[in-house]
Image (tube, rainbow, N blue to C red; front, top):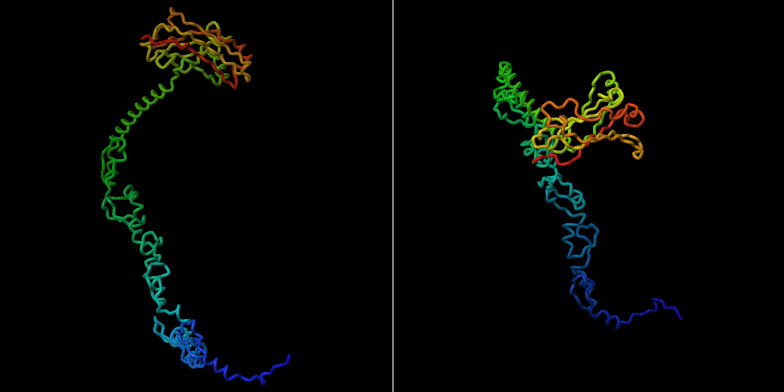
Length: 406
């Protein structure tokens, strides 16, 4: 292998002529140039091809295709000269780019989003004086609202003055109108303070005060009438409550509290009698009441506890069968902690129809009734838990047979 030097290479004139005569396309064919011709003419074509890049005519140093030269000189060349479209001041290209976005004459949208476009230099004035979304205080309450809603707020503002409905001279804040009408309005027709008692007088505040001073006797009569009427209503309500609370089951569990104190009183005084709440044998039955002598009565005095049953005048006595003929039993409960070991005392009787005690009672019931003078001895009371926590329980039960005669 031998070395080949450039100086020893000689061009072939015929080959070179053939190459230069071959048909070629413009190097900017892909950019859209349609030229095609011999290779020898390509250089001359490039000197005029609109797609070929040349130095910027403004000498900014950029290589720009001839077809884009005008756009470059107008819009992107750093050395171009152009006027701002808003303030019309002339700038070089780079200075114009810095100026754009800061021009005081450029219209921009309000930052409060009110929809207005304002020159940049006037935005602060707009925000403070003209923007419909700027915050302004309500002249009545001082709270801040946007300018386009403050009027609507003012129509319902609690501190806004409104005319008095009674047409007095003073404007009144809306939230104080009720207090004004009640306590201060000089034109209001006020009722007398004894209106609930029946006084019908109405007039101005001064007239009502004068009427109150001059009508003391009249008002006293009205109040007395109201008090009497309320007393009657109260009595009726008490009677209704008493009827609703009546025991109509035919059985009464009588709770005797403070047993020790009551026993001591019975031993110190003669004839101390405890009476139970009244109860009915049924809803429309006989009315009964139990009676208890802690220190005994009759044959059981001072040694036993005596129990009796009384028949009281009832509301349905006219419908009942007389004489009273239902079995009555008394049960004294042993309050032992173990129910299985409890030993209650039970006594019962069947009424004798010939006894006066069981006939239909008059308005004044029998003083004693019928029962057991020696129901339980005092000794027995001490032996078991008939009294526990100073409480005794005694049950009176009537046999629930048919009692209505019709």
